[in-house]
Amino acid sequence: MRISTVLAAMALMLPAAGAFAEGGDADSGQRIFNQCRACHTIEAGGRNGVGPNLNGIYNRAAGQRENFRYSANLREQAAAGLTWNDATLTRYLTNPKDVLPQGAMSFPGLRQPQQVADVIAFLQRSSTPQ
Image (cartoon, rainbow, N blue to C red; front, side, top):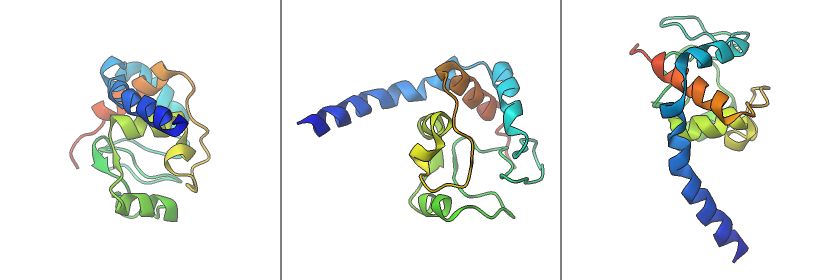
C-alpha cells in the first residue's frame, strides 16, 4: 500500500515539474549556468569540454552531441529513450544521480526550485537548431 501511495504522489508531481521552465527567468538562469561553464559550453557550434556542449539540449534525445565520449550510464539511458525535457532536466538539475546513478558528472545539483526553473528556461532559450 505504501509503494502505491508514493507512486501516486510522484505521478502527481510530474505535471508540476514541466511547469518549472514556464516560470523560469532565462537571464537569471544564464547567471546560474556560469558555474557550469567550467565543464560545458552552450554556444551554437561551441566545443565540447569536460562535458558536452549543451546548445540545443532542450527536448533533445540524450547522448547526441558528436565527438563527445559519454559515460556508459548515459549511453544506456539514451538507448532507453532518455530525452532532456522539463521533467528530466528538473530531476537531473536537482539531483543528477537520480537520473544517472553511475553518471560521471560530479555536480551535486541545485537545491532551489527557482534556480532549476531558471536554468531550464536558459537552456530552452539557448536551444538553437544545429
